[in-house]
Image 1 (cartoon, rainbow, N blue to C red):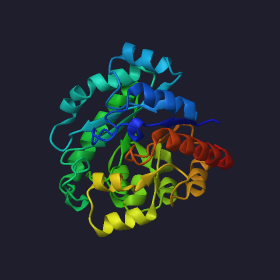
Image 2 (cartoon, rainbow, N blue to C red):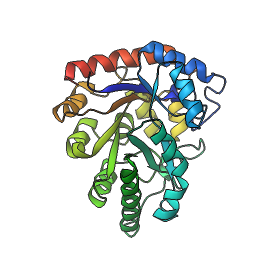
Image 3 (cartoon, rainbow, N blue to C red):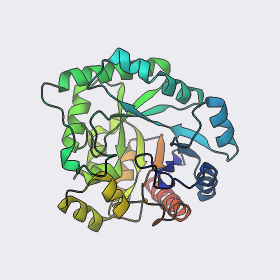
Image 4 (cartoon, one colour):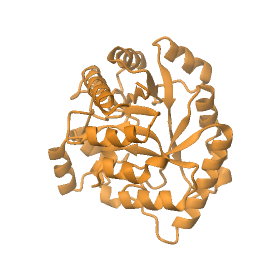
Amino acid sequence: MAVRLGINPIGWSNDDDPALGGDIPLETCLAQARAAGFDGVELGNKFPHQAGALRAVLDAHDLVLASGWYSAELRHRDAVDEIAAMAAHRDLLLAMGCDVMVFAETSGTVHGQRDRPLSSRPQLSDDDWPEFAERLTVVADQLADQGLRMAYHHHMGTVIETAEEIDRLMASTGPSVGLLLDTGHITYAGADPAALARKHIDRIVHVHCKDIRADRLDAARAGDSSFLDAVVAGVFTVPGDGSVDYPAFLAVLADADYRGWLVVEAEQDPAKAPPAEYARMGHENLQRFAAEAGL
């Protein structure tokens, strides 16, 4: 296939709640990811963050680094300070041969707090948008100058969550701000992944593939759950095991000749959802869907 299939280690060890999978060694994660058929992985909290050590760990399992998440604070600091703050992460991704940086504004986010419902997330006022968009574009321009594309990750519990907020972000920023489309997060936020992909296909530079268990989503919304409580309850699963229409979504990518990563990122409680089993299921389903779409 022209696309590459990767996986995020969050199914083994959760970055937002390190107690989930805290006892699972990194070696287990990497061995099982490779055995499932994946070509690459994204960074997680158990990975070394020095290029030499990271390359050695990944090479031992015949894996490459697809990208890694960066938590920005652009609502509270200017672009110059943000560029300085992200320098080490940027340099690590460049040293590892990555093409994109997963980038999300996390100031005030509630997605890592079990006692905060998603309804309490921060939001940008109309007055906040111009400065935020300008700062984001400056940071993305700097990344592009260094050889990395910003892949902005809309995420539940953050200031960019809904389809309308994604639309405004794309309209307000320069072309250097690429979009990471996450099928699970946009479904949780009430929109259709295929429709969003069609609207912003020229900006999509990275894709996270998760599925949604519709009954768990209904319960989470009805109870105004926290993000982590919804995760532990099983709102997310791997592609093909939920309600997301992957054939329709991937057809949009195929029509646009998308050639980036498709990364399975399905955070679940590993005590309830055995990571090796779900990694195999996710790879098998995503590979089939992608092949049928012509990717």
